[in-house]
Length: 232
Image 1 (spheres, rainbow, N blue to C red):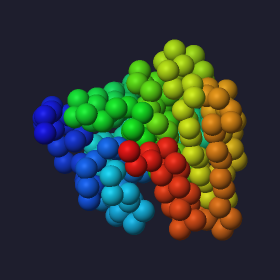
Image 2: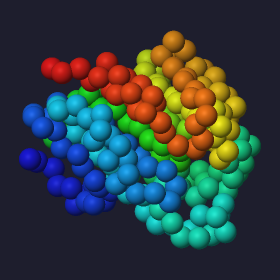
Image 3: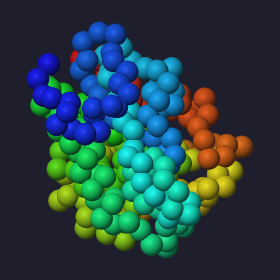
């Protein structure tokens, strides 16, 4: 094992679900506001593939404007949850660099970028979209659950010379989401089709589901990962 976890701050205490055999692919999954990596490590364990390593880092604890400046795990500050709310541009870009450092670390350890999927839920899904689309490495895909594209007005120009123009995106949303309405998810899917090849964007909605996941969604995530990261 080469590469030192301590040089990548988010990796030092990330929750890692190791493969049961030789790891030939990686899924990096980012939790939502106020959560930790543990809950998604548990959820991903239920759909794990034996040759895939799952990395679920914890967000740093920062004051969140949306929640009366309460300090909680948050990838960047949130001012609002509407398409036109002001955004923490510096915080989003810094968070994306920290996630890219995890990608680079895995590449140094022998996993090519086209065997890496980046995903997340809510704020974590938002960061996974922004990070992957601005990444200089060609990744396998993005899993974007109950989320939006941060700094959406900067795209498609912000997409790093279209390196990930053909990336596969699985976007899922609960139809009864009271936090991030499904309409915002649909607008995000349309925006993504202007950034990547439109046929590569799948947008699935789930009736009766609020701001959470469901078994059908997790099966869709499993199928997406299996298709993009087959056994080699």
